[in-house]
Image (cartoon, rainbow, N blue to C red; front, side, top):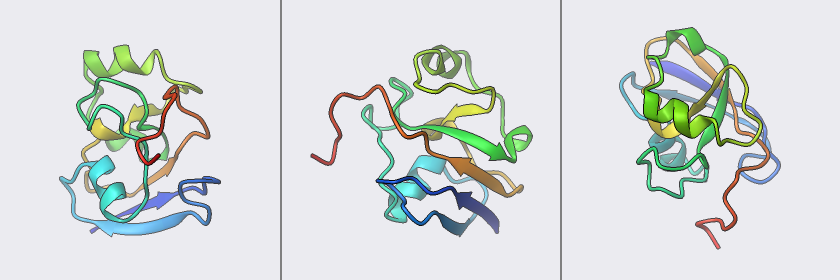
Length: 112
């Protein structure tokens, strides 16, 4: 099992979380299935940046971002060198620590 540690986010995950998952699962789907309501305006199709996460630990264990993901990330709020779109991350064997940025460029939340 792989552990994913999610840093605290005022609205989405106030206390942070630590979950165990099977390698090969999609990060966004994992978070949503566990009740962590990460934004996902494009329904996980790599067409927006609302599921932007920063991988604080375990970044090098992930597959490289596709050209499409890289192009989308250029539009993300708070972009960092270890930024990825959660919808494009397939969890591997190495534990991950992620941070969900405080803001997205999404003007409307799916939950409202």
